[in-house]
Image (cartoon, rainbow, N blue to C red; front, side):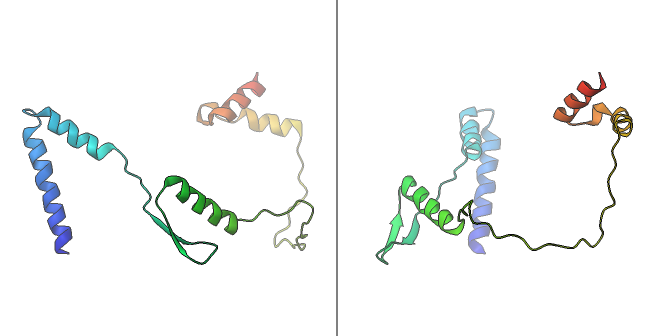
Length: 131
């Protein structure tokens, strides 16, 4: 906990220094701002077990990508298109009545839609049908 408090106080001191000097030393302000805005998403070294049961450490980005790729291909398998286990039939707790659509009902619903509140693609389709 002492480390966290010390780190926070050092961070506040640095921010106060930057704020005090931002007019007299704008370079320091922009340097601080750029250091906070750049993303630093690096993946650390990865330990894995090789085919010969030895522990391997991946330092290179390509090796890390290959390790993740191997892992995910092992976890997510592709099923063949020829073999398909048929799902058992399910009974519906609340069966639907037969649906009936007529052109008049659909046109009535389309005419009552507020185009200004529709999403872009839907708005385009609605405007096309309303013309």
